[in-house]
Length: 215
Image 1 (cartoon, one colour):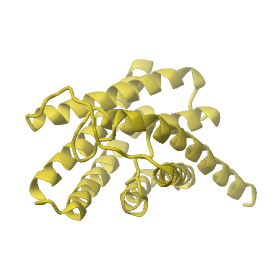
Image 2 (spheres, rainbow, N blue to C red):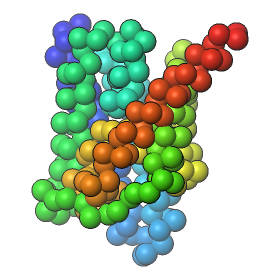
Image 3 (tube, one colour):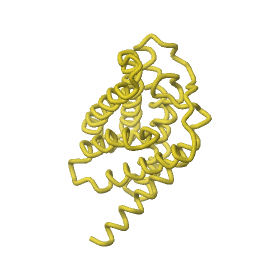
Image 4 (tube, rainbow, N blue to C red):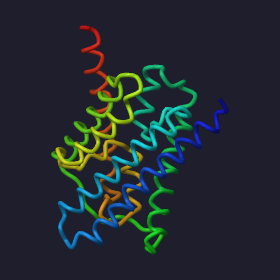
């Protein structure tokens, strides 16, 4: 398969995922009448459905990572050829920003904006490590053919059981800093989120490896 098809798949998939996350957040906030729990529920459902469809449709092309930590762990495991890693990450970050801008355009918002929503503190960082560790663990432990449903279900649950609402993805944090909406995150808070996600991703890999050695 041509390399560019893999990279385009990651760009389009990440863009669509962020568009779903941010767009549903905008719609939910408009319709929920100030009920944050209802807005988060709507945001969660849209993300779960979009994630399942995107993994099913684009998985055969690029593996449907849509997440630099997933790509990094897969390259570490040699499940992804390491010469693809940088291009995957660039495509994912570009797609994340594009997805935010598309969502803004659909809702007639200013296209280029920065989030002012503060998401910081040890509990938030720990939550991101837990969320990302769990995500990698689910990906690596999913039976063949079931990753799309299991990942979507996990992310849906993690929206609610983590203090950070489970970004679990550096591309998601990157894209969401361009949106001063329900799903946004202040640019100043993104680096700590990404650091926690990377740590969590490799902890998820370590747990998978530990359990695998006992099989």
